[in-house]
Image (cartoon, rainbow, N blue to C red; front, side, top):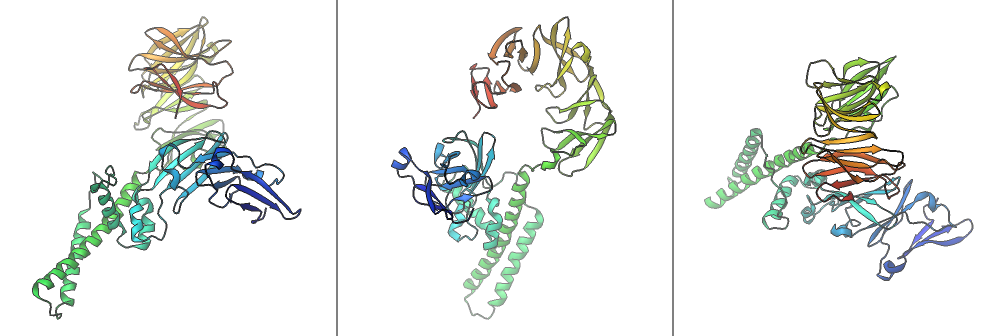
Amino acid sequence: MTGNEFVINSQSIYQVDWATEKFVRRFEIEGDAAAMGERFSDSLNIAENVTTLLSNRHLYIFRTIETTDIDSTLQLRGKLSLDAKGDNMSRKGSRGNSIQVLELIDGYLVSVIADMPPRFSTLIDFDLYGRSELLLYKTIDSLSSELVNRRPLNATFSYYYVFGGFMASSGIWLVTNAFDTFYFVNPDKNWWPPDLDIPLSALILAALVGLCSALGTHYMLRNAGLPGPSHVAWVVLNGFTGLIGLLSLCIGVYFQAHELAAVPQLIARDLLVPAPSVHIPVLSPDGKFVVYGERDGLQYNLKILNTRTREAELLFNTARLRNLFWSKDSQHIIFELDNAIGHLSIDSQNPPSYISMLDRAKGHYFLGPDVSSPEHVLLVRKAADRYSLERISFSGQSEEIFSSSLKIVNAVYSANDDSAFIQLMSAMDQNIYQLREGALEEIVPCGVLDECFLDTYDAASQTLWLRLDVGIDHLSLFSWSAESRQLQLAQ
């Protein structure tokens, strides 16, 4: 494909085949959009997998491979509104903004950095610093999209661009944010961190620079013949200017380190996409550790790896490792063996200990950690054609929560209100029920071929989180409210 195969006018995309001298219209804006004056406003951006084109109202997404067939109509694969949902997205195609598109299995993920100031700024452009924001969208189908996440970017996001143009950029940043706050341009902006603690050395250095600036001014004006008050005014002014200049620079550098340190660390992909010898790596809920089993002959070396330092520590060896889990507080590792469930505290010198034995020949099986408590697990035991759901503490104390003649597929327990959510499987279905005061109430019907997964329960908001493909063609996150008794697709 050559660089001059496409011609874009206000409402159409044309393609030229120079070999056969064809000139074909591949796509055009139609219907109400055309009648309301929508116009293409940019050139075609052709990447390896995704091709995009901006109009004054939408971002159009196509598949790059489909641009090669000149005899077919170019199919629209995604359409993102630039001014949808009041997000002020009409600015995002303008100067100083960035758009990235990632193809998913069921659509596209679009990240937009809006209001990013240009690299070479004038003083007027400093009003934009600290107002950039990152918006993440997902296309639902070829004509609609939804906002997934939105996060304001701190002023230091553009710090290097500012520093390249103005030495006193940090001071200008501080003044701009203060102006926003005090003149109610943006009254909610937290422009002065409440835990700011400027080092004493920075204050002493700023005072010394101010003093040197004042003495230098006094020395240079010693023979100028200025009146006494004017001489003193110039000395004080230049000394104060030198102090403010250095102090603002120090504050700016501090802000940069302070804010960047607060940004969650990105976890390297290779920690969770392991080598063939690494078995079931599991990331801790706080993101600080990865626990995994490393095959060594006929056994596994259970190791814990610090995601920041990348240092791994051997915990113990076992020959029958099946699965690994973390407790909700990231303080305990729960391991499933062929015939037992055990745990190990990462902050303790105590050796690993068993929680409960499992007789798989009798139909016993492990469900996982109890999401309502960091020191309990859930497992199922089968006896006399009945399945019993048990909640067991790390000390081995067991409590039967529920029993049924139907197989218990999964369960989530709520210790706050002593209720549970249980998924039961029969020959026809695998419905999800709420167990409350000893009675079962069906809350989510699931067919035997449907994908239905219980994730967790938030006791504070009385919300159960599930992943379902019921009524839709792909697995999605749903929430069920215990208060309203309503199931809805998570937004």
